[in-house]
Image 1 (cartoon, protein in one colour):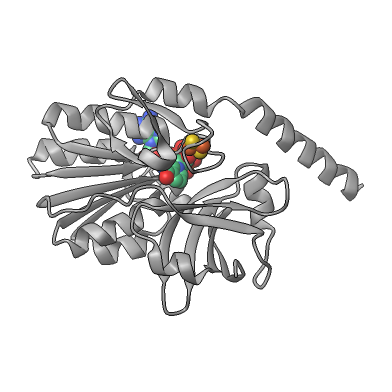
Image 2 (cartoon, rainbow, N blue to C red):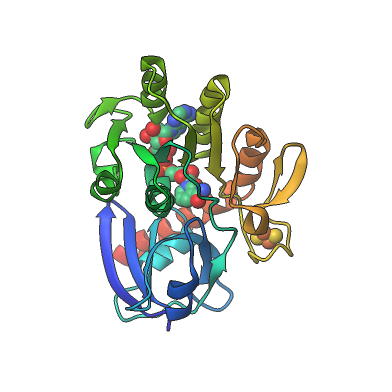
Amino acid sequence: MNRIVFKEEIAPNTFRYKVHHPQIAKKRQAGQFVILRIHEGGERIPLTIVDSDPEAGTITLIFQAVGHSTRELAELEVDESILDLAGPLGKPTHIENYGTACVLGGGYGTAPVLPIAAALRDAGNRLIGIVGARSRELVILEEELRALCDRLEVATDDGSYGHQGFVTDVLQSLLEEGVKIDFVLAVGPAPMMRAVSELTRGYGIKTMVSLNPIMVDGTGMCGGCRVEVGGETKFACVDGPEFDGHLVNFDLLMKRQATYRDEEQAAAERESHCKLDSAM
Ligand code: NAD
Ligand code: FES
């Protein structure tokens, strides 16, 4: 159990793992996540379950090695095991046939979009996908989303691939062209989800966003993941992670996401000094 059976670097520093966990593979639904720990006393890492294979008993996780703990996770190899893996956690995505659904993924936030896109497609929606990244090599899951979507657009900030600009620029063009969109789902950095929500508000399009605040226990006990939605406090781990983007207090979310930024930076600096010392 918890054994890594497959590992692939799908973009610089971004990894796809398949992990053996038959119970989670059987139970998980679109929108749910796991919390894992690599070793005793290690940080808890929440990761969306991107896919599962109930027959093989595996789940697929995609993450970017951005902080101390995800860098440690990226050092694990096939046949090594993750210490513990709790899940499936969070509410499954509410899925219905809206008509035309548009899913937007920003950077490695594109990973949680994939299972939701598949579920929306299975429910009979016409599907438009918009994927954005800073540059071409950071675009992930393009092929997988192209296979699910009736139309897929790619945007890069530097114009190295697809449209030049943000995913919101592409969405705005579609809306200005008069493309009918009945539902939007956006996952990515908080400024992106806020910008998408501000744009769709003017068109009255129902918009859901998947929030990624700091999480600790994942069971609604610690309060670490609290967010404000419609003026009420919600816990992303049990009440979400998806919420109505028009009601989310993004300023508060971003403030809370930055809480441990100094500690993360200090840990990164310590690691790079250790690497330099051991190289000398
Ligand atoms: P990034 O900063 O490179 O941005 C990716 C894309 O998002 C950009 O190319 C652009 O198209 C869009 N974007 C960014 N800022 C924007 C803005 N102000 N307005 C409009 N569009 C904007 O992303 P990254 O470094 O790959 O980080 C991915 C983010 O996704 C992280 O913040 C991560 O926490 C989040 N994420 C969320 C979940 C979740 O379940 N909610 C899961 C994984 C990742
Ligand atoms: Fe502790 Fe959500 S992570 S309440």
